[in-house]
Length: 635
Image (cartoon, rainbow, N blue to C red; front, side, top):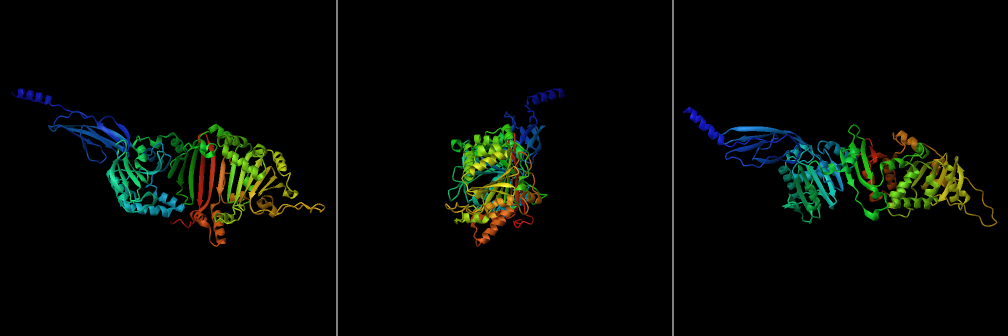
């Protein structure tokens, strides 16, 4: 009898359909990206299928479920099946969720984007950079206004986390070609519900946050053209905003007149792990500049025939990244990169290879320069490429030199250059301010720049200068300080000394040239030109005091001797001092632009830019030094 009962029980149990758990193989995904587990199937009555994702979220139930991991990490996913009779079976798999970086959250076709990879982790650094650039108060005011509207301190990573934002993810501000006037703000999230609540609080508050606010907004549920849900809003001024959540990021189309769905449509189409991070131009840029504390990326649109012949039309993608130096509070580094549309790496290598090693041209120039530019390149190759890719700009430069110096750039100068040129800028801030104020003072004529060019063939240039001087008075040429000097007219002068050509344009107006005597009257004997005649060249041909080279060495500026590298140094503090002195001389009336410049640049000491070609484009590094004990450091 017992045997029969056992057999019957076995038969009944064999009729019960049991499901075997199968959570799938180990997988890799991105944080915020939705994954499907299991598959749709018929489940016996009374059977439960439970999913535990190992990330602290509530269990889900069903044969097929969708889940996204809000943070990067390795998670153990357990599928448990509980039959009607209470028996359970479990199986597990592992999911690796990679960090979805902020470039992955930005559409690949952006026109421009500002990306900050770790805004909260580096908040102290960002505030320090803002203070260095005299923008600390602007950042604090904006953060205070947003915090009051959102209901928490947006600069505090713990408060941000509690309100659904992920401090380990980045933020971005970008524009897209579909709606060039629209700005979209993106921020990483860890909880969609909490972060959306915070966004709603901000947008429905009356707090004004400048360009990026304008509330309160009246909000309502809406959809993108593909059916994706979003929140749209409109304020009393008729401005539109919209909020979209996708793959662990919240997107806010900032206030504007256009339909917000236009700018957000591309966001909805981003594939996790792709976006701007997969764009070849961005990949190349990031390889050169990195991400730093912040990176700005832009893509120049094709301007068509209207921009043909201009260098600006040759720019493709460009980027720069900011690197603060915590170990040196008085230094800021910016790495830059740009691609050119029609100039290959081989062409650039040839164009930026000087014929001779660069001399110390700064030692030939006066030491009170406001700025110094050093060019090191192959003259004919560089001019050929400039004429080919930016013919209109090249023609304008050629004509300007012809008008000012009576020299033919292509025939008289370029064939004789060795490829190394130094240009010193000597600023007269008083004339600058008077020009800004609209007074009739000859525009910027009292400011000047001096070009020092290494010559491969001095005799050819000397002959060209003699031809240009054939109709000039004898007093407009002389031998001064071992140099041949020429007054070319229109504020331009030239001199040749020791295989160096000096060209000076601008400065205080020289005395009038010698007037031819009347017939029968004896001409006065020619006199040697004095400092007033030589103008700014007097500091070159009759040097007194330190040279620009000595000044740069004394303040620790170097790097002007690298062949093929272009350098720019700007004495920002000196310019600010001269502007402030000139403003005082004009009764404190300096014009709004001059006052704003002096205020914003008051913490800066100087800046050094180094540019050199690369096979993929043009690399550059900008170093900005700040004054010790800056007056705005506490802002």
